[in-house]
Structures are given as C-alpha cells and as structure tokens.
Image 1 (spheres, each protein chain N blue to C red):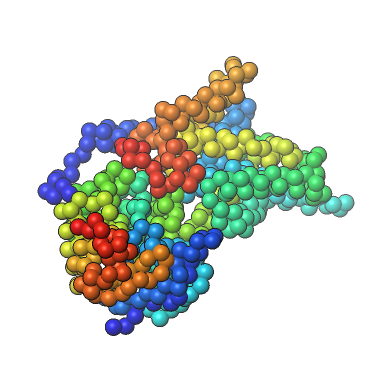
Image 2 (cartoon, each protein chain N blue to C red):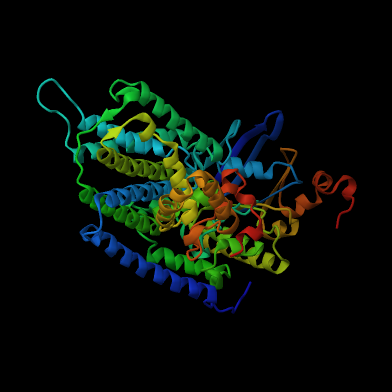
Length: 349
Length: 252
C-alpha cells in the first residue's frame, strides 16, 4: 500500500509544469499581439476577415469541447446551433415592410439568435442526451440535417435562395468583438473546469452511471452545458451571418463546421481548456497555408492528420503537457460503450 | 431493529430469463448483511435494482420509509444510499483526491457551491478518508494508474464520502491481496461501529462475510434460498449444495 512512501515530484511532472508556465507566457504575448494587430499599417481588411473567421472556428471548437471533450457526448450535429443563430439574426435584421424600415439592429438580433439556439438546444438536448454513444451522435446529425431542410422549405427563411443582410463591413470592429468573445469564452471554460460543475461534467464523461450513483443529476448537468454550447455557437453564427451579409441553407448549415470543431479539439486535446484553441489555430493555419498549395491533396492531408493524431498524439498537442484531458482512443472506447473495460496499459501515463 | 432498506417481491426479467424471482430483502439501521450465492444467482442484478441502476419489473423498494422503486439513482444516492460496483468504477482521468471530492453529498450544495472549487470542509474530509484508506501518498496520482486493490479502496472511499446511511458493496475484496482484505474488513467494521453505517455486501469470500456480517442472505438462480446468522447458513445443506455442489464436493 505504500505506507511511509513520500510523495515526490516526478521529473516529467516538473518538465510539464515548466512547459505550462511557458504556455501561459506565450498566451499572454500572443493575446497582446492580437489586440495590437489591427493597428499595424500592413494589416488589411482581408487579413482581419480571415482572422475573424479563424476566431469563429476557435469559438465553435471551444463550445464543441464542452459537450464532446468535457462531457464525452460526441456531437456530430453541433453546426445546427451555428445555423440557427445565423438564420435568426438574418431574419431579424432583414425584416421588411412596405412602410418604414423594421429590421432589428445587429446587437439585439445576434443576442436573440443566440438565445433561440440555446433554448432549442435545451429542448433537443433533453431528448437526444438520453441516448448514448453513436446513438446520440447520429441523433444530432439527424437534427442538423432536418433543421437544414426545414430552413430550405420555409418561407420566412427565404427558402433555398436564402436571405441578404444589410451591408456593414467594419472589419476591425468585428475582429475585436470576436477576439473579446473568444477570450471571454476560453476564460469561462477555464473557470468552469475548476468548479464542481466542471468536475461533474468530467465525471459524466468518465463514468455516467457511477456519477449518477454518487448523487450527480447527470441529465441536469449535461443538458445545461449542451444548452450553453448551443447558445454560444449561436452567437458566433449570428456574428458570422452579419459579416457575411448573406445566408442560405448550404452555407449556414454546413457539416464541415462540425468536422472542423471535432478535428480541432482532437488535434489540440480533448477535454482540455487550451486544446480546441490550439487545434483550431493549427487547423486553420494548415488550411490557409499548406492546403492552399496542395489543393488536390487537401482531403488526403486532412485524413492523414487524423491518423497521426490517433496513432501518435491521442491526447492532442496540449495533452502532451496537460494530462487533465482525455485521449481520442479513450473517448472512442467510451463512445462505443467500452468505457469501463479499458485495459490497464491504456491508463499508463 | 428498524428497517432502513426493504425490498418486497422484486422481479427482474431479461427477455425470457428471470434474473430475480420475487426476492425479499431487508437491511436494518446500522446492520451488516451479507449477500452470497453462486455465479449468476442474481446478486449484482439485485444491487442494480436496489440502487435504481436497473428498473424492477415487479415489487417495491423502500428506503428509510420512502418508496424509491421509481426514483433515479442520483435521487437514491441523495437519500443516503451509496454503492460500489463489481467492475470498479472510478474516474480514471481524475486524481485520487478529485475522485473523492466529486463524491460529496450533492444535495447539500447551493447554486454558489456548485460554481466554486472544493471547500475547506470537503478537503478535510478527503484528507481524513485518504489517511483512513491508506491512500494519502497517492492523492495526486491519476486513478487510472492505481493497482486494482488501490482502486477498490478508492471506490469504497467514494462510497463513504457522502456520509451515507447504507452502502452496497459489490465484491469489495475481488482481486485484492489478502493483507489488504484484512485492512478493508477493519475499516468497514470501524465505519459501521463509529458511524452506524449499514452495509449490504455481495461477496464470494465467505469468510470475509462471516467475519463481518450479523446476517447472511443466500440467492440461488434468482430466488432467495436461505437467510440467517452466518454460522447457521454455512451449515445449511441447501446452501452447501448450491455453493459447492452435491454433498459439498470439492469444499475446502
């Protein structure tokens, strides 16, 4: 039992501590740089728009990580909340009548769009989160597809033609809004993970029956975080719609948005706070820089990247220094319902 | 003795198989009851029904006078019943301390308490349990890297953390070395005597049950075969036959 055994700091733990410290320092430096970036004369509106889209990918990945990484519910339809936020915003700001202009101003429209996404997530989550593993994932994929088709045939959404929003192209403003939102979201996630609420989410991921049996109302916790993720992704959807000045079902409800969120989180580190941020930035960089030069092979590169993650860095890039997340292989095992039968070897540090 | 847990006529079917056939069981306040039986006799299924991990097809279960037959597991846990599992269920990616911190009495938490880190009272309780269960040197280790015996101890600690009135222990000594079995028995006895915590133990280690329990219930093929004091049960020919085969063949 190790009586009399004294606790020592293993060398690996000390190294990881130093790396974490370096990570914090680098994060602050990058943040200062990002806030000063629009002031540089060489930075164009196009660059700012690209960075704003990257921040959108980061935000959606952080939200996906709340349900997929922390709670272990792998959501294949997360982009539905983005589409709902985008469409609600688009409908509200483009309202027209024969008389005076009745379109909403952007801030309340985007806010209501997020709220609608959050409320729908609460309703749909209460039904779908009774399901486990692949059943939940497929139910969410079904929700995503069904919602896109509802939008395609509805009159208020403009059907397949979509909606055009009034132009408002202040790129630096939207860049700053999204930067502040992403920083706030990451800070919120960091804080949440340290609370009992966050720990309960991890307990659900680790062993839902065990968590229930230890007094955690798992339905309440997982639906709450799912609704928040829906709200937050809806917020990014609304902001995107306003900047894009146009929405139709095929660009607002696009599967790749979910795939990007899943891949970003896996690449960065499932269930870690910084993982989805690092993963989304890396993925965006790959797409913009590398894949632009390897257009014919970009899907091959993406597939190869997935294989590399699973085989060599199952805990993701951040997982190399932060052990508080989980690995792709473990999550995959739980997803398939083998949660409590994992081998000892898999658990070794 | 007042009945803390009372199950009447519990029936559980899996398709055409009747896993539990009108089983009655009672555990009194502060009592230690053993539940034994051969493999497949329905012990773990009964535990699952009592802790509401599984639904019952017929019968009723009351805990502290309240009907819990249709409650969810977390509601039963909040009433004061906790359990361990045959296949150990600890949160492997969390540290030993975090595992215990997460096994508090959630009902006592305010909304503000939910959104704070653990409080000094919980930390003290965790430290005291870590010492009590000989896990203190491992407090910052991930539960996934512990040995099987250490995980068993941790799971028992998690069951005790919420200060329950009844603990269902499912094969607490399975895969545990003999020295540790003695430690576990000592600690359970201490918790029972000092805290008045009742225990219902599923065990294959008959000596462990006989040492600890005032009463033993024997299940065989989903039905109750016998019930009584350990010394009487061990001599019961029906139990001997069910457990060891006809005429106690191969008994050691």
